[in-house]
Amino acid sequence: MNTESSDVLKINAFIESLKHHNPNVSSAAVKKLVQSVPTTVQPLIDAFYNSTDQSLQAYIVQALAQIANPEAVDLLAEVVGTEVANHCQGNVRRIAARGLGLIGSTSNNPEILQRALEKLTWALTTPQDWGLRYAAAVSLQEIATPAANTALQQALKQESDKVVQARIAAVING
Image (cartoon, rainbow, N blue to C red; front, side):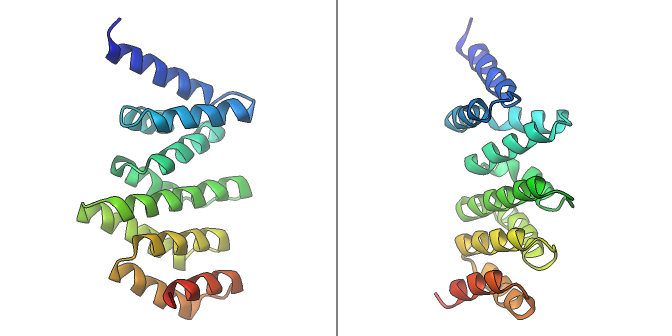
């Protein structure tokens, strides 16, 4: 067996482990997938879109957010923009927002940066989920471009949650 097909088998086994009922097994699989970059990015994206299992998708988002590969920017932006009814899925949106922050802060591609900025600015000003707005503020702080700072300054004027206000103010005031 060649190394490439061996790697594919390992990646598929780790992705399959994300479905395990024991969260420790799933967390270990996330760690291994993150360590196996870059060969894991596209299989994770494919697995996300090929599954309807929200737990599996949540672990995939967690792995992709930690990997912070620009190839995942559209998937993470999509997850940030998904309306959810339950708290657990809200947490996945926050993780995706943090992933966008990591991608935006490390990418040299203006299109990738713009995509991350647009979705994070939306997440900072639109959703009712204060936790998502907070995560977007942290991510915009990490990106730290003039556009990110402008978005934070504008959001501060309309933010009603005291915790999010304090976070944005701390970023703006250095």
